[in-house]
Image (cartoon, rainbow over all chains, first blue to last red; front, top):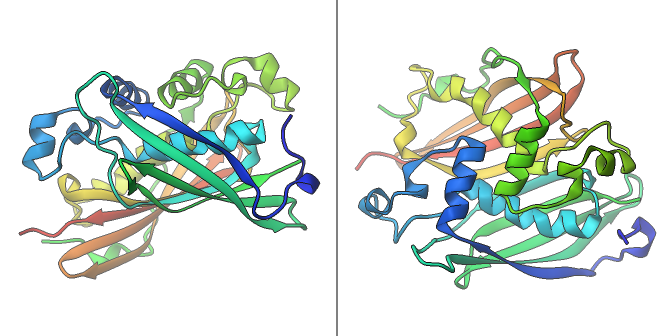
Length: 141
Length: 148
C-alpha cells in the first residue's frame, strides 16, 4: 500500500535499499540516455584523467537513488521535485559484482497545504557519500 | 580562454521537438533498474490516473541535455566540454512526462560564476508541450575545471 499523507510523520524512515551497479549497467545507461562520456566505460581514459577507475554517470546514481522514493510512494509521478549535488563519484570496478549504492531516506518535512513531504536521501558507495543535499518532494494521496 | 560570464541571462532557441515514445520510456526505465509497471504497462499507468505510460523522474535529463547542447556548443560561451563535471541537478515536475508527449525544451543560462580558474554555469531548461503546457524544469550546474 502506498503511504497516505496523513499517516506519514516527520522522522519516518523509508525502507533502505542497496543497488548494485555493474559495468554492464553503465553501458546500458549510456545507450539509453545518450551520455557516452568515455569516463563511464573506458578505464584507460578514466585513469588517465586522474580517476581511480571507470565511474558511474552522476545521473544514473541520481536515478537509482530516486527508486527508493518511487518504490515507497507507489507512483513515480508522486515525485514533484528532486535535486542532488554530485559530491563523490561511484567507482565501478571491472568485475562481476561492480559497485554497491546504498540508499536511505527519511521524511524531513511535511507541507500541509501542498500535501507533499520532503524526503532527504543518503546515498553512499564504499563508505563515500556520493550525493549531497539529495531531496525529493513527494505528493501523497 | 575560460567561461564567458557575459552569457548569463541568455536564452537559446529551443531544440527540435522531442517526441516521447513508450519504448524509449521502457528502455530508460530498464537502464535505471526500474521495473515499475507505470513505465511499462499502459493499463497500470491508467489505473494510477495517467493517460499512458509515464517516464521516471530523471527521464527529463534526456530532453534537457539535448537542449543544453546549444549552450555548451556556443563558441561565445567558452565551455570546454572535456573539462565539464556535473555539479548539481534539480528537476521540478508540474506533471509527469507521458508517452505521446511532444516536448519543446528551451535552454537558458541563469548564472555564471568564475572563481579560482573554474567556471560554474547554471543552466535552466524549460520543458513544455508543443501546445505550450509547462511540464518540467531542469536546472543543472556545470563545473568547468580550469586549465593547469
